[in-house]
Image 1: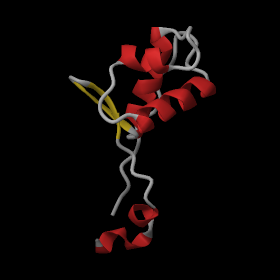
Image 2 (image 1 turned 90 degrees about the vertical axis):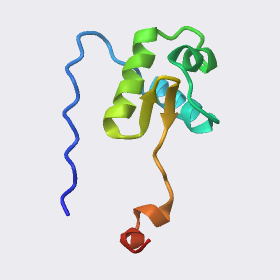
Image 3 (image 1 turned 45 degrees about the horizontal axis):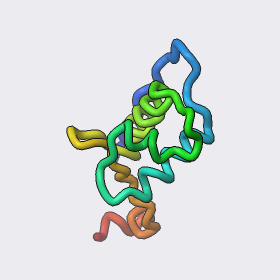
Image 4 (image 1 turned 120 degrees about the horizontal axis):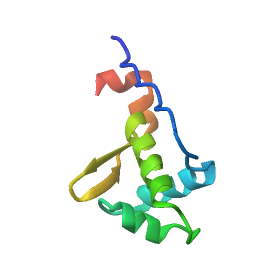
Length: 93
């Protein structure tokens, strides 16, 4: 079984999101009960001055890595951190 290769990260023409911004967005998405729009993510950020572009780039990076998906209603965190899923026994499920 081959592991799917992740696409290479895109070249950024401007400053990307900081690590603290990435962590804050991850916490917001993981705690959410349903999909959140980009504007709702910005509203829930602890830092009140966050560029829309930085939030968009962070969400795009999570999507590229397979941690989140985005649909018509917003962004949802999909990574399952269950040790059972990531163990070698997952094939026996």
